[in-house]
Structure formats: C-alpha cells, structure tokens
Length: 143
Image (cartoon, rainbow, N blue to C red):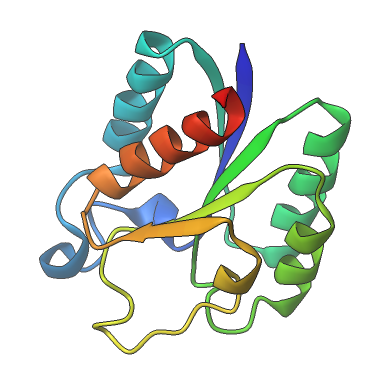
C-alpha cells in the first residue's frame, strides 16, 4: 500500500472561511474527509498535515523519510512566495513531489518557488486539484 503525505501550507487550516469568493466554502475538515475517502477507495495511506510555520513543514518532511513515506503532495499556499528553505528540503527528499493549488496561481500572478522541484503541478480546479494531484502521485508510484 502506497504511503502519501499531504502537507497543507500557511493559511490552509482556515479554508472555507478565508476568502470564500476565491477558495470556495469547503472547509478544511470537509476537504480532509473527501481526501481520506479517496485514499480508502483507492487503497493507499494518506497522512494530512497542516502548518502555518515553514520550519514545522520541514521537520515533518524529514520525519516522513524515516516513516517510509513514498510521495509528497503539497499545497505550499503562503509558503509560495519565500519558501526557499522548504524548497531546499523538498529537493533533498528521496520521494517525488506533486504541487497542488486550488486556484490558477499563474492567472493570479503568483509564482511558487517550490514548483521548480516538483515532478508536476495541478492548479485551478478548486478542491478537485487535490484529487487530481493524488491520482498523479499514485500513477508515479504504481508505474
């Protein structure tokens, strides 16, 4: 069974209440339930970790290596802009990384410093970006 870690970056824990006109009304708890159901239906392990602190994300990623995590899906969110330490951490990981964003960050003029170390990115499909990102990761791991 594949073991995937999903990291939700800065501000994602406020999903559903933060700028619903941009991010929608789905709460973090509702999104988690949807993604955990996807994991169960597709027979993989999914651990979801929220943090507003870049250093906590880095610590979680290094712990993931020792836990046997096989893939990272992450919405860096607020870490997009200046998450260079997080980018350097991800670059050193022994497993693939798929970046996801709910909105079309290119259309919004947002550059993610982490995309350069991702295998690929999915953005612009709301909460469905997560499912698409997880399915892309499963394809990578099951090839």
